[in-house]
Image (cartoon, rainbow, N blue to C red):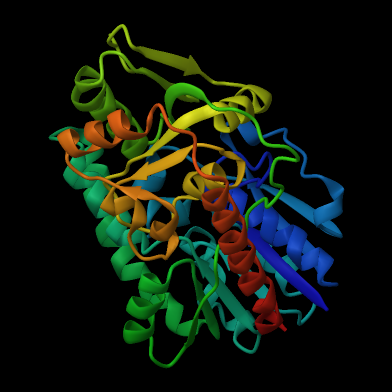
Length: 366
């Protein structure tokens, strides 16, 4: 069965949320026997990045047309910068179903030439909610204005989902919202796809707390600053390691170590050996793939706040804490304890169940 997949960015390396879901979904589709025609946008640090050939049969790269002139449009910036006539021409060369990864790629969704095609949209977030929350978090500056305008444009553009035949939400909460809003379209919960390669052997964890993520992203930067200012000072005898891409965190306390742009090997070592993984966000949208990454690769305790656990069932595998004093108390309680073997086994079984559920629903793409 042939399937076109339109990805918002080159999904390799699979080192952040959206890329992880796209890349491992492609692997699952290939293993299920699909012939994949991958269309993907190359920009930023992925302009010259090649996707491994085992996840597609054909691949086409497109240049994302960024720049301030693209802001003068009723289209969301994340959509207008991905308009491409060549993409539409290639999609029209056959009648295979089309999977649009994210609202970002949905500009051609209502095009008359695609009227009779099966069109599937993977929703990684309720995008206008995500951007509005970013606007509320950034104070008063030019980024606040951009996020607010983008949230409005995304809210209006989202109506194009009426032209899809299937919407695949990444969380049950998002599926419920979208089902109420787009009752004429089939809406399903499609769990996220991720690497389920558990460590081949267990290791002893070390006495440190890990926070990891792309620190150039607003919500991750805010969480890192929250740890530095509100959590680390309450635990002066505990080492905190903050690892991620492009950190700009200024001065940090003596018990905080910042690991800038770690290699995949270094990050995997940190994930495997951290006694505690601190999973904090102030954006209760989508699902945080770094939480899944920590659950798969980590051997330590997971402390997460309410917003990190919103809309999915992974909270049963985590220790919940929200206020700074509560988080610090949980760290004091668990920093000198290895997790029980039974707890790690529970993680494995739960994550295997999630992966099987996602694979079982790939038949909906036919």
